[in-house]
Length: 492
Image 1: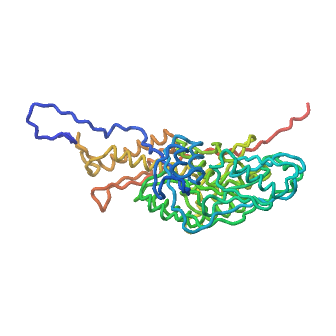
Image 2: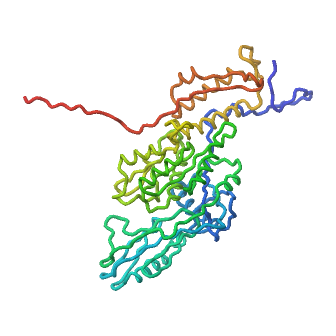
Image 3: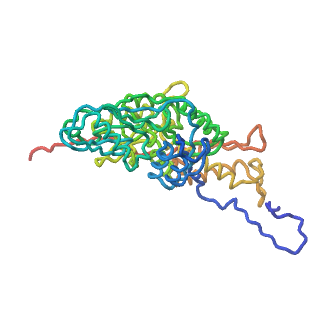
């Protein structure tokens, strides 16, 4: 018998004493991967960073320096960090468009002011007070709208440039592409126009077109591992490319799993259409209803809030989405409408009496298998996060516990002191690991796992072991169904 040393040789004749250090048994708990967020988006010319370069970002101010104040990417990062300042964040801007058009929103005014007052305006969810005077006609009001906007303290972070015309205020996006920010008036309950102002009609004057090409970003990322990716683009081409890439990363030969977060601002029908157009277990699409907050901010805040949760199996319901404004009270979806969206691959939110937005349920867009049959197996975001955590912990534990071991069949005398494993050694290690997962609330039903757990020598490669495990993932408590059978006592 001899001990298998890692660094001490056997042919020592000098009078010396050698003690090596072996850490293969040091880590006894869970191996948790450090979560990293990647935020994708457009930059502005004022930014100092080159496109297609992933780089760590420490603050919203640094994001503005690198990608330009008011850029889509800087606003995503600033909003996300306001919700979660602890998780590591990287940014990557996509190639600017050589073609394409910037979207334009117009606000057409009717009426002349008869009593001086303030028009309540909201640009991308930010309040802008527009003062008007008696006698201001539609052209003067349009000028007042753009003047107030351009004088706003945070105009540099706004997504538009604004210019007046005869009875019309025009808002042009600062970047090209299909995404449009929101312009609206009288958002809150009780908001009214000053007397004499009949209406201000907001419409899309020119749709934007020509989103960046996601393929270039995917190529630039290579195999850098990101657990959460914020995707601001809602076009089918770019989302399809990223969904395909995430499926590749999830595969057993790559194992760089992650979840993409996007959002849709629109009516109930538009949101259902968007959700049913996707079918990926690696994407979470938040339905923002007709919120004044841009979809890219919703996507960032939702992804950052999810990334902050240290327990992969714990449901995200009731978690706040700070910085995301709800739709106007009369437009908020009822329970039945939200339930429909949860069958459309759309995650849902609710609004508390104070107007704060919280997560109701986070799901993936996965709805059917490859045959088109409804399949809820990858429905919950917790399923994807828990599977990722289990796989990473299992891989890490095997690598740490058996870094340079030899392999032999079961049923033989295991040489004491030698770095040798058998299939039964691996199986015992896996059973102990499952118990750690269960102790942390990731899985349940140890006896079922033990009965179905298979470890054996690879029949085609003498240097490998095959393993098949069936962990019963922890479920989430989402509600109670009960019945009240009341009694009426007879009169005495």
